[in-house]
Image (cartoon, rainbow, N blue to C red; front, side, top):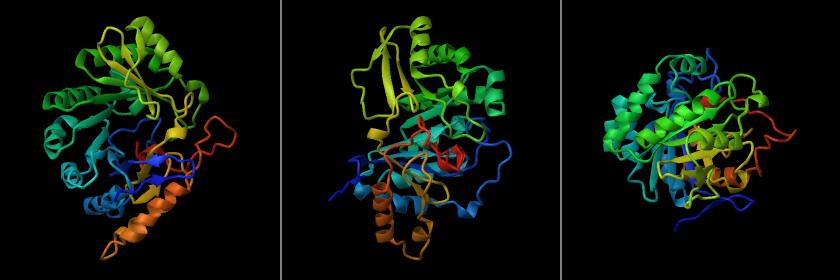
Length: 330
């Protein structure tokens, strides 16, 4: 019998985001510092431990999983983890968020393992702005990865772009045209206070601005008929039928009231919100000679029960978490 992870606000949690590593081959300014000390590899959850955690979570109603990082494709043999997760009873959806640099080489093996959905982070098609934002080169590798994934058969493939003023004004329309050409779904994400550098609210580009630019310079948009108001992204379809755009408006349209997500970090910390100030260490429960499934189950139930109403980014009460994005999982 499947139970549900329900918090005191009545929100049902079925979406588990699993970070498999804190390592990354980029240094995006909105995500992580240039100089960073990574967790010792021995402190990362093993694939077997991750699978055990999912086997405990699934009977509690978790049916959607997203693998994140850091950069998850830097974790050797990630396709093996996918093979371990796909047969777990109750799991119906597994996705992956990646920066795409290593995707061209791994797309085929991941697809063969059972992965079908991808989100690829790409903020610009311009090599110079790509280097300024990520502090590395490689935009051509990301594009090659996207095209390789499409050729293998992945779908849907979503392209995630963080909307930072000073950059996205130049890149929103070219990204939209690129995605329309190749059949990718573009998603803009409002710039959030979760990165390594000081967050400046004036650099936020809001959803309505993005929509105005696309409608003016690309094509008219209308709300998608199958738009789910509980989902993080507001979805819009182009009037000419050539694609879809999603906007994750964490600041201008917080979706906390319908949040269904829980997270586990690469080093085994359970978090009930991206911006959580507290977390539960479940790694000791997983590393016992016989994993303590009762304790794991209770940790999940208790974590969700303690979830706050929302992150309060737009209020004076907001406190930025100590962890940066790469240590939490995108």
